[in-house]
Length: 398
Image 1 (cartoon, helix red, strand yellow):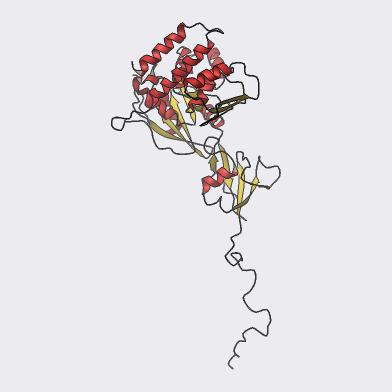
Image 2: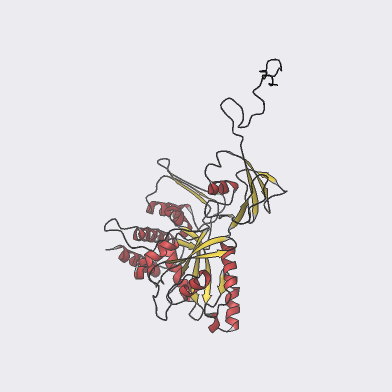
């Protein structure tokens, strides 16, 4: 029996099992077994030559991927926003590979990827769905493009396909400490009352993964799915913006309802409606931080900022130094910060200071000391202190 047949068998058993107090432990074990099989399904094949994937080289300060069903307007959106020509036609599966483009917005460069449309069952490999979803895992933000004239359950289908391969949309990682050990048994503790889990459920799930020695500390109320995600350790938590295209074919009441949904925005590629609002929403959700550098005794350089993100190293002074050059951290003394993150102008800060958008930073290095203890620049003359000991110049010829 193959992996897909095992997955279908477990899903059928879960659908037939009633949910009550007596069966919750059995359902927890089935969920853990299902997660293991799906992880095996996504593992790369060990035999055969290199596969033809969609991955492109990272460029810019962030990466945004367009995902959705065929013929919802992804290629048209890429052409309007970036200016990159992507083929668009009236038939499905027009785009057969990954087409990159660059958004220039607020002095930042954001890479936008147009991916082929996926269908139901993409997580199992239908329609090259695995290659498409693997590119989504490398993105900082997902734009789920939906057809406003189609039923609302299309969004649920796409979300379910992404969830089945370990992508969690608009969620934060569970605040749980987990570490495997060689000996010592299972140490399970929590800082609050758990309402969805008990020791018996946790032990059964750990036994399903054959983990008999570990340390587990719950710092928030978690569910069975959260515990499985922590044990698997390969989940990807990505922000997602739901873009409803073709709103020019809807009534004003439907457009107003879509605009009020969380993480949703209505647009129209045909009439070029609300494109500026879409770019503002992308900038807000990516939370990019622009930092302007300043040399000693000079004006700040407002032409080319250093863009920091929480997902790519953080927004601290330490991340700023690492992005400029790795040697700066070795000679770092302190930094002077002007902007919204500073309490006064300028504020003297260290590595751990959190920067905010449009801050100005001046990095001060340590004084370079030579082997003899002196600095790089001499503070005293090499001449003798007494005038009598100094070398006398020859008399001028007359």
